Amino acid sequence: MVRRAELDDAPSILAIFCGEQAHSGKSRYKDVNLIDVIDWIERMTDRHPLFVMAQQGEIIAWCSIEPFYGLAAFDETCEVSLYVKPAYQQNGVGTQLLGYLMDQHLALCFTRLIAYVFESNLSSRVFFEKQGFEQWGKLPGVARHEFGQEDVYLYGKLLS
Image 1 (cartoon, one colour):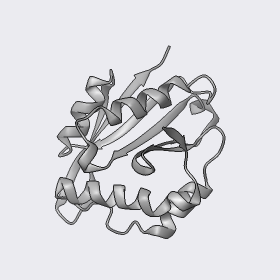
Image 2 (cartoon, rainbow, N blue to C red; image 1 turned 30 degrees about the vertical axis):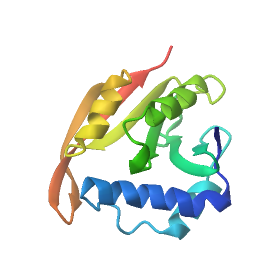
Image 3 (cartoon, rainbow, N blue to C red; image 1 turned 90 degrees about the horizontal axis):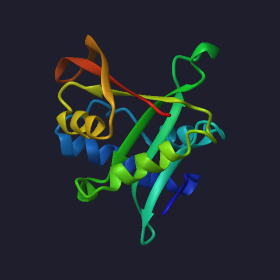
């Protein structure tokens, strides 16, 4: 079941977010805490929701869309973030959740999705490519974290 996130979901969303970081062996977002996640949920709008996927009452994945760049010229483009609990990865959960989000594109008034993916996050790069996203750009060395400097890829998809 997919639904909009509620404040009570914040601990589960944070656990999935942090679990993915631990699973990947990188902690690029170690400063994210429960207050941040509560803020994400409170900043949701009708056009820029945060969805959770639950299975038997357990939240197993979440995704959100945010405005891209903050200028009116980009209103139909949204940045997508998607995280799946490691135990549920490679089982179609991410595909199902992203599909749900893309099915909402007319109601949410967006025609393009973009995703920023760290170069070392090969599983996410492959995932987005399998979903029909194309590499629209590469931002060399823009990310700095405890493991050094890293490129970030920009993936995009035009929805019809």
